[in-house]
Length: 170
View 1 (cartoon, rainbow, N blue to C red):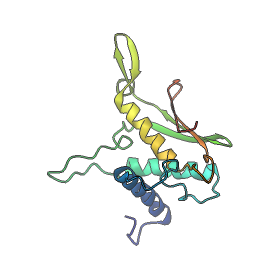
View 2 (cartoon, rainbow, N blue to C red):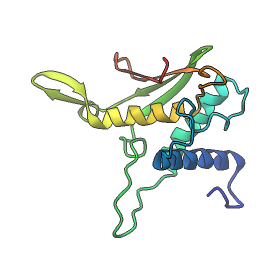
View 3 (cartoon, one colour):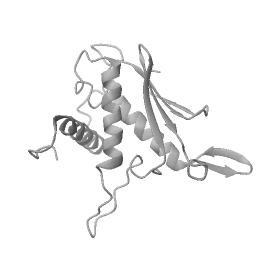
């Protein structure tokens, strides 16, 4: 898709970010400073948070629409928490203040997002995997390490619930 001549610039950039995310996650060779996100420079060194939020929205849309569940016979099926989440779930990416990005997951079906054990509701493994995947995606745009602090603080929330995932350093 990245190399196809009819792919638009926006789709090409989104596909490249997703490919980088997949390769970074699968390689984990230790050559990158762990304080850096996978793609802090994809949006430009001086990009504002609104530009980063737009890129995250594009990545979420790409994961939901473009990645298909097609499997090769004899190969294990690849699970993607964003793609495999119920289709009614909505995502809101906001920059509510100067140093923060918040992804809110809304319209989560109760029977998919929570499990009840002994009358106590807890987050389901599927919802936790979805939130972790979104946090990883968001952290890919962050930076840190020897040359500077974090670009922003990130959080993943589920609707009005108090359930919150924070990016490192938040």
